[in-house]
Image (cartoon, rainbow, N blue to C red):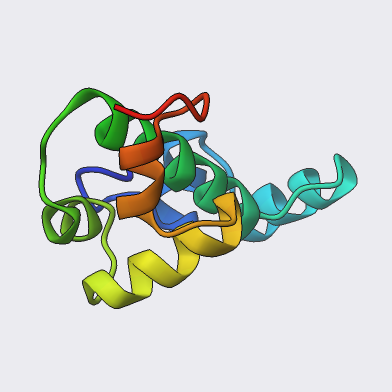
Length: 97
């Protein structure tokens, strides 16, 4: 749903046939937040796209619904400790390309 820009809390709750506040409460009871899960999925997809495609970083940012490539770069750097271009060059296991 994230890739198709239909991954809001309300849309996911509707898919699960529950109110969005109920979904939030259930996630919190498990120690999660909706925003945290969305960011984890974004990071997972970003790593796959960086590793398995030559897609430009700006296009990856747009596909993951970031307002600008710089916003994606900041988020990715927080998650991985390095910018996406460096991560792509280094590779997922630090082996380089």
